[in-house]
Image 1 (cartoon, one colour):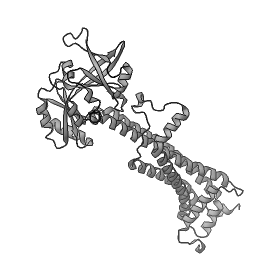
Image 2: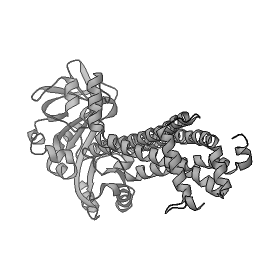
Image 3: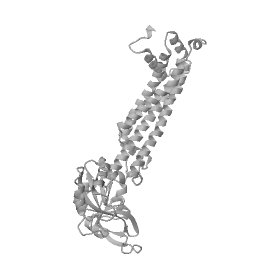
Length: 425
């Protein structure tokens, strides 16, 4: 045993030596070549599984972030309405009360209605929104960006409208042309709708297909007059921290009283965000099974190695190695394979995740097709956001599965009886 003593435990040295021999794949008259192939497959499977998990979760994170940011560029963090659905009769007093909250940094009134816009034989659904241009720029990133350009083209009393770029494309209109606003007639609910002419002042692009294809912006007074509203139908609030919108919304609901409805962006789009989180969890579980299958390929590799190294195990036992030491040798071999596969997958996954924005366009150019149609996926490119909170569990789970996979073969190696193993040598 003295010849095996080094600065490192001999179990570690022998385990690493077996791993290096398996990776080298030098046949010596037994099954070493096939064992090396199984070991390579196991490590490759772990690497691909870990890389796939990192890339998929990073893309899901990026997709959620992109849609959320573009959504919040158009909608407010918090909205306040009358509980009965009517216009706010004293919206300035309500706005002043809301601004007492230290989290609220800006308030803007608006009117909103579902309508139809038509040109010729073409009709498209639209969300007509009347805004106070100056106040809107303080609560909406989109309005701030368009304030001095597109929105400045809306003249008071001119019944002009700014259309989302996709909505304008569907109606085949450009700036200066006219469209027809179709609204229900409140005086005759079952009769013919009202047809009101509007002039397209300009178009805008929010970068979010849902809004680019449905939203029509007007001046607050003009929209209120068309809709027959003497006051704004709601207030939009901008917060210092948008991630606290839920908490601030509940607090404002209590302060404003039961006559008001307070809705924050997390509740307005709850179904979408919850569906993304469910998809992310399911993808994690499915891809984790791939890592598990690859990790348990180590079981086959180690069982074959134990069978191949029967005589080595017997010699070590006769030299005084304990069953625990024999078990440690094969735990080291299997765990090292898992570490190599995991680290390789981590490196590959991070490289792909950080460069997916360049990889996907190259694939689209090669295939001659679009992988992300904007009218389906809301955005037209592949975003990616690797997060440590996702990557760390992936790495730990892969290492844990690799370690668990070594236990049975290692225990089996520790049960080898020297006399029986050397009987046929």
